[in-house]
Amino acid sequence: MKRASNPASGGRNKGKTKEADTSHCNSGLVVATHGRHLVVENDDGARLICHPRGKKSQAVVGDRVLWQPTQESSDEGVIVAIEERRNLLYRQDEWRSKSFAANLDQLLMWIAVEPVFSESQLTRALIAAESAGIPVTIVLNKIDLPGAPTARERLAPYRAMGYKVVELSLIQETEAARAQVGPLLDGKATLVLGPSGAGKSTLINTLLPNARAEVREISLALNSGKHTTTSSLWYWLDGTRTSAVIDSPGFQEFGMHHIAPTELARWMPDIAKNMNDCRFHNCTHRQEPGCAVQAALERGEVSPIRLSLYTALYDELSQPRW
Ligand SMILES: Nc1nc2c(ncn2[C@@H]2O[C@H](COP(=O)(O)OP(=O)(O)OP(=O)(O)O)[C@@H](O)[C@H]2O)c(=O)[nH]1
Ligand SMILES: [Mg+2]
Ligand SMILES: [Zn+2]
Image (cartoon, rainbow, N blue to C red; front, side, top):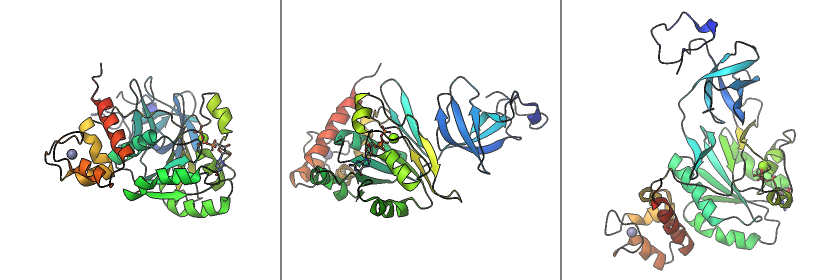
């Protein structure tokens, strides 16, 4: 990185030529990104627009950054450095990676009775969270709709493999929903992640009536092919700024190209639980003899859908990439 260009930073750290001079920097938290611009919140709570140093912004919502005022305007800043991340949740599609947020305490995997959730996308997001070391709670929203029993049944394997599953209706049982979700969020930075139209922004508005997160009829949102929420956004839930929720844009695809096929089983708790008993230590749980995962499938302890998702993902991630 180049030395800081702001004259206020001159004089100190003269020996350091390669690294940025961060001695006169302010520290802050990235609370939003808009194209190349970032919104950074200072430790006193004030927010300002910051620009990245290079052509592309590397910082994501949840990043702690060091910034300096720009030369042109004192109410805008330039990012000098991004502090080391505890974790980063992102998806890796074939051609590009898309970061959701960094430095998370947990993920609320937000799905709904409608639009009917894709188990493949759910599984992918769970694998991404597990591999990033981020604890997950699954929330099933819109249980006021008639498809609730089917959705509940589809989530049974996820409960069985140890995920906490919360069911609620933000619209019909708003108070109850608030009481169910509120305690989960206490003192934590929580990313709300899930498909478009599941009600993530509705949750933000339920918790923070002044937030006015944009919410749209699912039919309108899905027919336009656009997501209502287009970038991650950080919201504090309390005046002392200890609990936060991050709204995120819905996803339709969840690329996993950052995960090696041989690592997959490790991040799928139902498969991981059984794989130590396979005859071969490098068993891929597809057709090898003495496979304990296949045996668990036959005993009904691993769901056929999960094993077929695993196999399909294994094949997908084993494709050569150019
Ligand atoms: N029936 C029912 N509808 C709900 C419930 N919660 C939210 N909705 C509706 O679902 C629609 C989509 O909600 P949003 O909050 O915009 O969904 P989102 O997950 O933020 O979508 P994206 O921003 O596109 O990712 C809105 O019309 C909400 O009113 C619920 O509990 N029951
Ligand atoms: Mg939204
Ligand atoms: Zn096996």
